[in-house]
Image 1 (cartoon, each protein chain N blue to C red):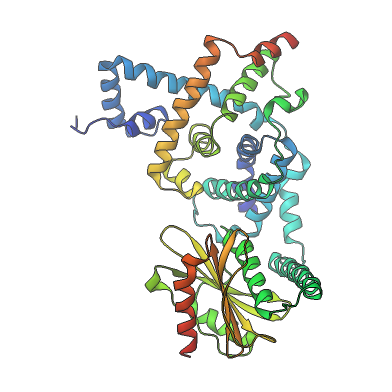
Image 2: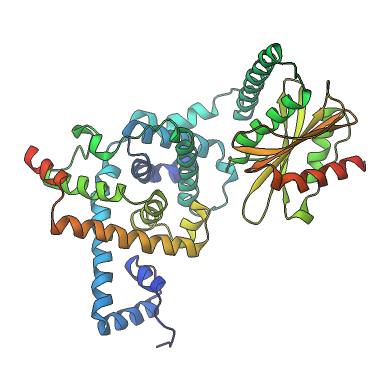
Length: 176
Length: 255
């Protein structure tokens, strides 16, 4: 019991971060993580990776998010990062830092879902390529090609904004 | 130094600090000689740092009470019907919903085929269980599975073998329907495509020719032979599943 608590608990902040990048709505993301934790607790004995529960937890979370996408796809419920009320973003971060975060998260949101998932699992959540392949249930070659495309695409987005700031960013600066 | 050429994968693994030290040294040497590639890879490294710092504040936020793990463990351990029973209850409600829709439909239309209900039950089972990546089936052992479903259905049930058509048995479970328990078997192929075969005794339509499922996002066929109904359901067009349905019918007849 304690073992389960000690192994799962440290991963919760990362699960929240991944969930929020996937669904981009605060309440929905935390609901998703809660659902994930409940399942993890119920099925703790059935996990395969005895050493490291991280990939297993991310897999549960990812599968829940995917089935939720399927359910809400027809309803079109979607809150983009631009529509999230200001106070919900980076509550503890300084204003400048906050703008930078918003901008990067906004760019990230423009990536196709499958590319974003790979990039986040590997570059942010530190999963190995093999672990990411298992979480997403795709071959490792597909992980590599999606990672490569995600990086190229995000780089284009970042460079285009530093060359000529988008209207959105200017707007944000004015407000601050 | 090895003579293995540097690949795009090596470059990404370099950005992700996932290379063995020896290979990393080779990538560094390569980048020193190829400034254009080095520039791109440096940009990717910066991008990685930027992403991590932009997303760090989310992971540093205090956890809300709903994510208190000790409390979640407590609530999951409290004696109560296991999730499996909730799933059955949900299935029952779905079936009852389906049945009442079917009854209403029966009141306005002449057709009240028992196959319609069976096909609906099979489609619901497919939707609920085939998309489940955590526990699509309750039992995987085929001997145990056959014993279980046969005792629940109170008659010998034969497990269809679709391996010659490229589908392996994943396992199965008993699912509740408005007409009593049914046996559900699930199969998958090398591409991960899943299909479901549902079988149960029929009250009406004890013998019925093979009929395709009506519309929706899933396809398949239903039929009844000697009092037992069968429905095979998969993703996509019904026609592609016809040879599989024929195979199941052939095997069931040879009991």
